[in-house]
Amino acid sequence: MNAPYDIELHNVSFQYDQNIVLKNISLQVKQGDFLAVLGPNGSGKSTLLKIILGLLKPTSGTVDLFGEKSRDFKKREWLGYVSQKSNAFNTGFPATVYEVVQSGLVKKTGLFKNFPKDSFQRVEKALNSVGMIDFMNQSIGELSGGQQQRVFIARALVAEPKCLILDEPTVGIDHQHVQSFYNMLAELNREQNLTLILVTHDVDTVSSKISHVACLNQTIHFHGFKNEFNQLSDEDRQAWYGHSVRKIHHAKSGGTQ
Ligand SMILES: Nc1ncnc2c1ncn2[C@@H]1O[C@H](COP(=O)(O)OP(=O)(O)OP(=O)(O)O)[C@@H](O)[C@H]1O
Image (cartoon, rainbow, N blue to C red; front, side, top):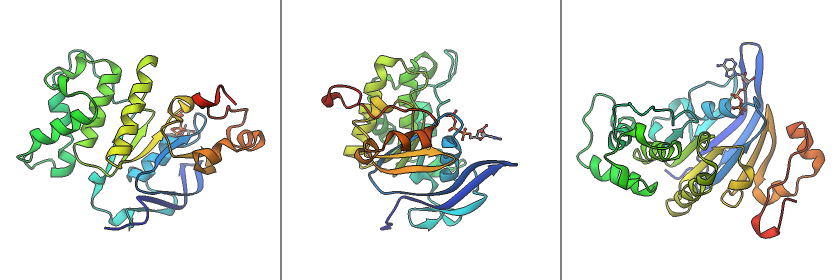
């Protein structure tokens, strides 16, 4: 299928009971984009992701996935999802890294079907992509938060998604490992042309990796290329975030602008 966009939202609004959370969101994400979704706490970022994933239905407006109406879209495995709470296993959890990643194939094969014959190769490939192949036989609970999160990305990758959606995936990862985590995402984006949608507060750390930025606070205040985001005036930023927000820091430019 040669869809113009992986994801296209038209005038999407959403409310929980009387609480309006999203208003008139129109947004397009094309194949190979690396989009960072930014916004203050409670601005609707996770809700937006759940609408894209089809876990919540818009109160009004429509979502198209790979050129089809979301409600008609059957290839759900094309959308991978890694939530911020994935890395929450304790040390006693009785599953190996291999088993956790293999469970991601259920999305592709269905719950009551056997795993495909080449599942070992698929798990191997996914673990290689996230640099975790050496941990294949280890218990998931024995890994650090950052390692567990890589395994969860492998679990999403094993179903061979075209777009990976990540909700604050670095929560619980040691500061010194966050950069290498984002390097890994950038490599997936570059080498596998994987579309990435990332909700994050790590604007500075991820800035050199992303291609696009969307600024959300109930509605979209800005959506465009990263460079355009950097041109936003302080007034625009204040209107979006409610208080002064730093511009993206570029290591080469010699400091926060
Ligand atoms: N299941 C729910 N039922 C009712 N209200 C909810 C529910 N989930 C979220 N909300 C409300 O919707 C609003 C947006 O929440 P959401 O989690 O989408 O924001 P967010 O930008 O992801 O926040 P954060 O950065 O704190 O994770 C908040 O006011 C929140 O209280």
